[in-house]
Image (cartoon, rainbow, N blue to C red; front, side, top):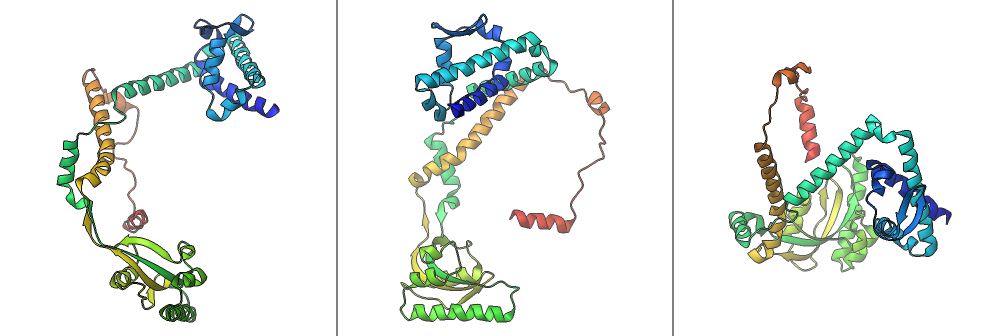
Length: 325
């Protein structure tokens, strides 16, 4: 049970730091849970109700460990350790330490504000069908899907900076694959054997359906130009190397119906509704209070009004923008 003891000791000490520090052992003793006294440290008792409450707080992965009498005894021993530690802290007056008092106040503030928000900001904002329909009618372009094509490909890698000889060798390999595919060999097997696209080779080169704008333009233009079942393209060069493409299927453009788009719209609008509720709540609360800012005092704290964050050089700014894209 050494491992179990270590787990419980960690949980116990963590509990003292995060939760127990907010109340002294005397304070907690004043609000005793019902039940028989199961253990005590000096005059501080632990009832069966309190022990059960502590057991219920355990995360799921630990609950199985206290299902036995031995496990509960081990857990109780560590709960007694926590009580003993709190009694020692009382004796030393640690609760009155200014730093501890400040941390307790900060923790209490977080809990209170969290509760305030939970009680007043809807977690799952309700949106009427009329609101959703209005959004759908005003944003029809968002629910139009362009044509998509599904292809397989074999990639023989070649980078723009490669020597000409290396590029020519890559193209030669791609031409050989194209010739064998057009000769009737199984394209999926060719892709698994020769393709250097690790993301698709094990799927026989299958890239699934994709719309325009997703792939490199030469690849995309060729893929969308194919139309016959199993049609094989010429060798296509992109910045990634040389591709041989096989046509699989096509999906024509379509528009989602309201019923198809309804849940998508709901998921899109709900966070904004929640943010609006939050902002409205904050505004109403602040409007009820007399809030004054003494700008002269704020200014006296220092800071140069003329100081601004350094602006990036144009080249650097463009580089950062390119990264973001």
